[in-house]
Amino acid sequence: MTTSAAANVPLGSLYVVATPIGNLDDISARALSILRSVALIAAEDTRHSARLMQHFGIPIPLAACHEHNERDQGGRFLARLLAGDDVALISDAGTPLISDPGYHLVRQARAAGVAVVPVPGACALIAALSAAGLPSDRFIFEGFLPAKAAGRRARLEQVKEEPRTLIFYEAPHRILECLQDMQAVFGDERPALLARELTKTFETLKGMPLAELTAWVAADSNQQRGECVVLVAGWQAPEGEAAVSAEAIRVLDLLLAEMPLKRASALAAEITGVRKNLLYQAALERQKDV
Ligand code: SAM
Image 1: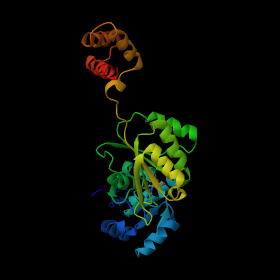
Image 2 (image 1 turned 90 degrees about the vertical axis):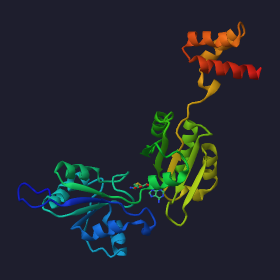
Image 3 (image 1 turned 180 degrees about the vertical axis):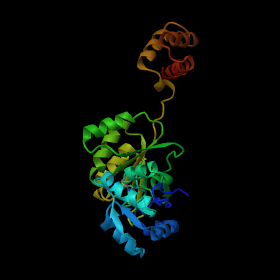
Image 4 (image 1 turned 120 degrees about the vertical axis):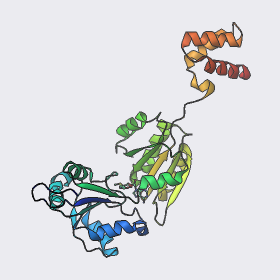
């Protein structure tokens, strides 16, 4: 058991507790029992969380821990932890720290030797990924994109050739322009999925190539409401002729006009540095086209 050096009292634990992202039944039995047992609950928005606590009959005091006061108030929560009180950290919805406050408090607590205990539960990105049917063995979470178009496009350009499934959070009033930018940067055909209002009455999961998904959202203003997660399939290296640069193809074409296919692809490989079998495949495809 860790104790406070000064008073030799056992330190409290900081519980990082996930709450529902819509459906209140998604709170876990463990989360409820921990929320009932702690001395204090640090909440992103105390008024919002008061309603949740009332629903579950949890009479524990709430104290604000949001992005504007988290650094300053961290000391207050830490003092309680060092004095031996258990504290729970919650956000408005889902898992704290995931595009939500809590990072500074968790860091401070860990640095002070306080046990930080995750109490897992709902998280919109994981819920969306679990039902999207896109590759889920490797993925990256990009959180919220910049609000302004130039910044958003620049960020999308950075991940254009990312092979892992991409996951974004987006505000409803920006969902259409966000999808339009994704279509412009990733291309019309890239598979994508919009997961909207997860676990709520109007839950919608729609998976289509980006151009179709953008048109579908543009045509129905209902799809521009509520909370949403956008998933985009990772980039796939083109195969065959498309994988070879235009310059290598130009060299290959010149040589194919003068010599047999095998010799032309070998020589083109030496000149351009492109792998011989790729150029051989490209040469076969080009001869098919003739
Ligand atoms: N901490 C939360 C989590 O674990 O998912 C995320 C908080 S972040 C401030 C809010 C964003 O999460 C929303 O703008 C939306 O992108 C996503 N989100 C939250 N709840 C959602 C839901 N029920 N359906 C779809 N997306 C949701």
